[in-house]
Image 1 (cartoon, helix red, strand yellow):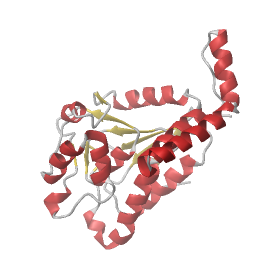
Image 2: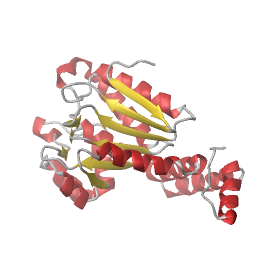
Image 3: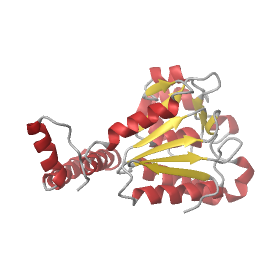
Length: 256
């Protein structure tokens, strides 16, 4: 399916989705709807096991909401909440390759991903700076930033509209690792390749259980864990995993 503001590349069980809305990959209605279609596409594609999300160019992951398209905010903003939550609860691992600055909705998108790798560059900064405009993070930022870095650090970042460098973001656990500009996508791809080798059914069960616990409480999370354990017990991947262990070789999981 062709997209106007999104690029997609699928290879070896990995799909890379690139936000391509110059100059700063901001979210207008058209870009948001394209992105939603892309996310739905990979969710239903059995040949995709891992997703990488990045921004076009070498300066910007995403600057957040496109204020020039404010007339469509009644569509874009609720859709941002919906799609970011869908990613947060995705049954396939999602990696944010933060290739430049990520502000507002851009950082909220990265926070919805399971892993975050950020480029170490002078102008690469992350922040939820909405209060500078008299508004608040509205696409999940107040909750997800707090869950990732803790309430005190999240309040400090949001209430004072702080912008953090890659090193500062790493120090508080906002990102998983730092990468150089020339190696960012290689590092993201290397992580994706490792994840793609993991048993897809088991990965999905782990992500669903953890998501249920985060959104619906520990009892629901434990219930989903029990259901997941029963599902993987009947899978061909379980047989392959045990056989590979006994035969002292690397397993090759089929997702069945």
